Image (tube, rainbow, N blue to C red; front, side):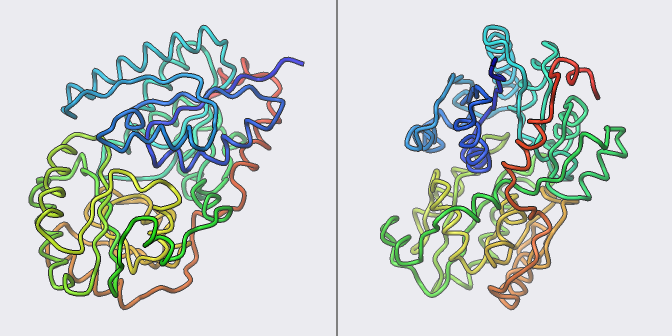
Length: 379
């Protein structure tokens, strides 16, 4: 029996953690021949060389494609996308790919989808239908949804949106967020074990700070960052601040420099290029709150009973749990949101993105596909 050739793209530490269990399921299922393409931030020391996490997990890598330039200017990002599109086109053709699975809304995903569409390869998109008005990821996500043949959404509101876009509701499936499956099946580290792993002596409180450039935000990166620093200064005495590096978007180089300068001059303040998925989720669990504009504050944090201070417009419009406190990128607004989050505390919260074993739900639907070529024409 001919195996179904499925290609999956991973561009950074975040999507790898989300895709991990699906990748595992595909490797052990004899029906499929999975091809994992590794690119983007994974291959750069600047972002923690996270391809090593994939190698450590002993997942097979079909191809690595190095695309990022030394500086994340708008022009260099476009050059990276062009290079990836050409290299993926070659790969699809040489390996006779039957289906490509893509996740999310990163700019690196766009060339993967365009190449697949031109080669008449059906696309399964995870995470379509969400809304993030403060980043161009929002437009990219909608474009990916238009190009995809089958949609695996994370919530029912997203499904409704795709139906309004004209998508076939019979090919839209709510499978929840893949990150919640990772939380459910992983053995997370305790605070003591995490302290040993990272060589940190934790203070009374821990703030996890994960911020990325909001690519459509009017406020300058420097002003955004200074407002955040001003808001957290009153907690410096008894709080550890754990920063993680931002994504490789426009203005990320400036943001990284600002964080590095701050970490060098302040006590109990740390910056990690990449904590790794287990350490990051464990840190998210033991933290008193997460501050920033990362989707992890909306997707994963509620399932870990960790409140979120969500700054600015990057996640504007996205479905949120009660433990998420929105604020403007100003010192006073951030400070008020921190107070509300700390008052809310570490309590069990209903997560609107939970659906169960996401990877099993995805493969259940893929297993039903009889004709992949015909699926490519179903929009």
